Image (cartoon, rainbow, N blue to C red):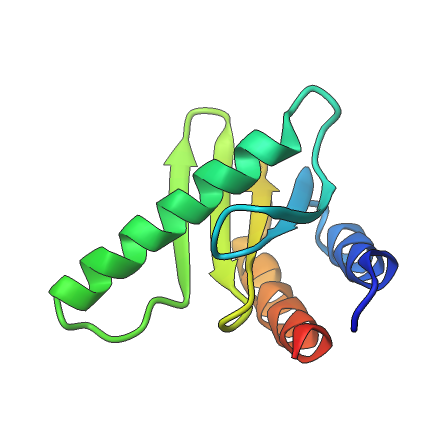
Length: 121
């Protein structure tokens, strides 16, 4: 069984390499596994809402018959929220500033999601 420490280390490496504002790993049911979000954010609330966002986006993709959802991106005035599947066991939630290099973030997000998929399996 993977430890919370291993998952947290993977998120720390992702944050350091991309400069995102924070990240969390949540279950598909909305339970928090680990979080490195800003201190003024309730990570349990974000876990529940992010899982709901991803699940709803997944249902839309299925209804449109465009295949399995890999990620969902929400753009807001203050930045972006990216949710990405880590397989059947979880979702990575990333808080991205507007000025971020999305190409780099998406590349690293693919790498971290695969790393976490292996840790969780």
